[in-house]
Each structure stands twice: as C-alpha cells, then as structure tokens.
Amino acid sequence: MDKMLKEMKDDFENYLNEDKVFTEQEKRRIINQVRYSRAENKRQMFFPKVISSVTLISLCALIFFLVLNFTDAGEKSQPADLHKEKTLVKKDPVEKEDPVKTLPKYSDKEIADKVNFLQSRIVMGMAEKEVVALLGNDYVEINNSDSESGSVKQIGYNFLVNDSAYQLNISHEIAVESIHNRKIGVQLYIGFSDQSEVLWTSINFAEGDSVIMMSEGMNGRTTEKIYPETNDDVIRFTLTPEEEVIYQKFLQDLDEKHLKDVNPISIAKLYVQAQLDRRYDAKYALYTDREGFVQWTKEEDEKIPERDRGTILQTLTTFNNIGAGSFIPDGEYDGYIEYEASKDADAKSGFKMIKDEDGIWNVAFMPIQ
Image 1 (tube, one colour):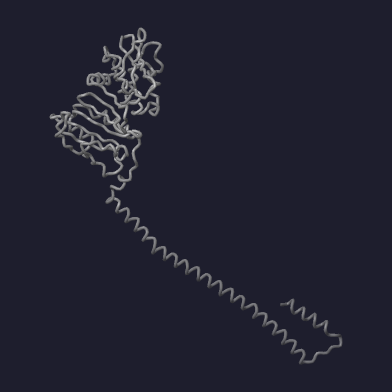
Image 2 (tube, rainbow, N blue to C red; image 1 turned 180 degrees about the vertical axis):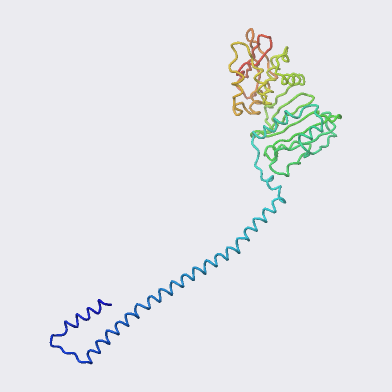
C-alpha cells in the first residue's frame, strides 16, 4: 500500500513543474482518489480471507462428519461379524464328526506301527474281555456259523479309517479295495474259542500298492500278499506250529538253548519272522557269534534306521519260498539254503548259514548271496 502511494506521489511530482498551482477542487479530487484506493484495497484483501476461512471450516466439518459416520458404521457392522463367528463356534460341538471325515490317508509307517502294536498285544489264549478292554467296543460281531477255524465267535475291528462311515464297515469278507485305497488303514479279525479265548487272528493292511494279510492260529503263522494277485508267484511266508512254538520261546529271553537241534532252514525262517515282526533284537541274536564272522556289534545294529531295514513286502519278496529250499553244506561249519524266490528270477537265491562252536546253526551276517 505504501509503495503504491509512493509511486503515485513520485509520478505526481514529476508531472508538476515548479510553477504549478493546485486549485481547491483539484486537491479534493486527489485526496478522494487516494481514499478510494485505500478502501478498494481493503475490500480486495478481505474477500479472499473470508473465502479461505469458509473453505477451511467446511473441510473440517466434512472430515468430522465422515469420521462420525465411519465410526457409527463400524459399530453397527463389527458386532454382526463377531456374532457370526460366535455362532460358528457354538455349532462346532454339534458337528464333531466333521474332523474325522476329513482325516488324511494314513502313511505306511503309521499303518505298520499299528500292525506291530496289534501283533505284540493280541496273543493266542488271550481272554475276550482283555481284548475288548484293550481295543474298545467299536467292533462288529460277524456270523460265525460257517467257520472252519474252530472258533465259536468272530469279531472285526477297523483302525485308522479316514472316514467315520468306515469305522464299522465290516463283514465276513476282507475289505480289500477299501484297505488298498487307504479308506481303512488296518482291518483286524479275531476268532474266539468256546472258552472265550483268542483262537486265531487275521490282520489285513496296505503297504505301498499292495494289501498284506498276517494270520496266526492253530496252523501256525502266515504272512501273505493278497492284492494285487499275480499269475505266477504267490508271495507268502509261513511258520509251522512247531516253529511258532520255538519262536515264541526264543523271543522270551533270546537264549540259543531254544535253538538246539533245530535245522538250518527253520533257523533261517525264525530270522525272517523276526524281520517281519520288527523284532530286531531277536534278529541280531540269530546272527552267528563265531569268531572271525561277526561283522558289526549289537550296539551298531541298534543304530540302523528303520528306513534302511526294508519293508514287509520287500522281506516277503526276498525270502519267498525259503521254507521250500534245500540246505547245502559247504565246508566244516558253513553252508547255504538254495531256494527259488521267483519263477522269473535268472538264478536261485542263496541264504548263508554258519555253525557256531556250540553246534547250533546261526545266520551269517549279510546272508543273501
């Protein structure tokens, strides 16, 4: 403002000469013009300030309104979502079967562990009440009128099912397809005598792409691949009743006195059965202890991981038909069992045996030739 007035004053003085004389009318006109300029400038500065103030106030009001509106919407919507979640939680107890129906299929290891448990805990002569106390009441009693096994009662259990609908899906026929597809992990049948004692058992389970049956009873013990069937080879391993008696006695204390006068083929079969049963302590006890033939210690044997010991099917395939083989002496204290593991094999298999100083035949370390 002062600068503008100064410029007007300078222009005015430059315009005038020294002799110029103002009339009263000219003086008033100049003064009025200066006053008008001051008033006009004040009006020009006033309106922008008013507009800025109004805009700022409006913006603050808008923000305040939006905040209130958002908070109100949040308070209305949030409890509704929380109510839905609480409603779902309340429904969970009613739908407890859902987790069972969505269980994944069980692995070979989980199935093998269950089979091993059943083999070790369900023994011949066990009372029916003890069996039910151990395994539970989720079993099916099966019509036993046509049984040729001598049992008067038969029950069945399904374990490791991936759908609750299969828990009691049990009949007199083995559910091979359901076992193969892992809908049923393990299917167990038990026959009881007229004294309500275990007379025989049959454990059926999957391993890899095969279904295996382990049965035990008056005729001994058999492990067999029952699915898929093969045209040429029957994959089966059997202990006779006499061999089963020797085997059970040997398991009690691992004392070689139970092996005295037992032929080399039966000793080899006990070794295979211990492998099938995962009784690695018994398996090692059947190795020779003859000086110069021991290749590793018991402590080293215990450190061998499970994955390196072979599966049940691998054991069955490797030692298939060993019981039908022939023992061939080869020197003063050694020999081998010659057998045909498969009809498709290029040559027969050999299983090496060593006679210890006590005259008892034992298995050579790494016996397969």
